[in-house]
Length: 360
Image 1 (tube, one colour):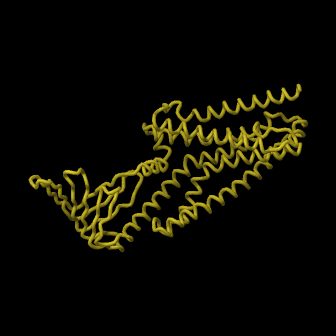
Image 2: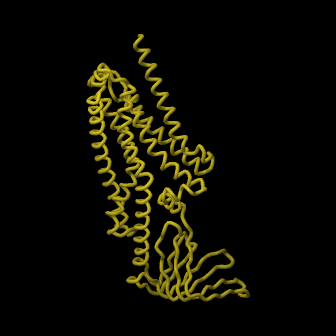
Image 3: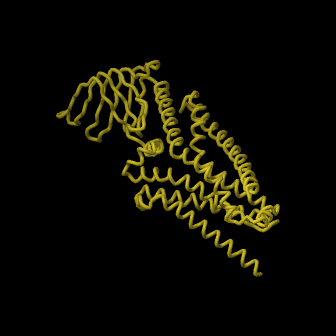
């Protein structure tokens, strides 16, 4: 049996690795085009492009691994069905359960790799790419700012004016900032110099002012407030995308201690992904079942639909957990439970169909 198991494993792994290589190459090409376009538009620096391509590819591997394993197993087992090899293997004493166990062993190895990616590598890659993008953007903001022009920040809530720009040291010189706290009492900051602070995971974008004054203006001119300062940090409003990005970049240990629904959903997703990798690998066994010589188009289409359904349901459940429409328990654990039920249902349906055809 070990010879048969090794043969099945080799056939699946050959297609898995070939498909993974092709998909990674396509993804790198697509990501390179996007990053180079951003660099040409001045959104990021050219030196950050290669690192961002590699980091984005590492992030994408979390999905690419289970996807290629699933379709690689479908293709390999389907080819063996058409060539009568599966029928021969069954005649030698191998059962569908043993075949599924052989595929599960491959799935377990890939699931371990997916666990490492999901729990450790992906957050690290998000964090590093986030820092690279923020540092590049901060530098570009300084490099591209034109002196003696009004620049809007955060959808017009802040207006910045600098009489000069020290591009070498990254400072705006003789700066004015109007902050629209409300329509009746705007705030104006006047400072000798200011700089954009690089973003990090735990603070919103910010401007740091040195040696200046804060003016809280009363339209009637009776209750103006003036404060002087040596250093002043002004937080800029944070975008929702930035908040999600931080959550993806947080360590799994940090997320495990959080009591916020969105953090818990992200934490549970990282633990669910390896389980899902193993389950959809086993799911490929019944989905690849067909009669020898039968066209593979129908079964491949069904496999594609099942794959979309599994990850679609996972996305819906994750959104529901984040929005607290589903409790954090069972939370994301409903995804592997749904996949197990789908696996059992498909296996029973195929067995029933086989018995029906046999009696016919």
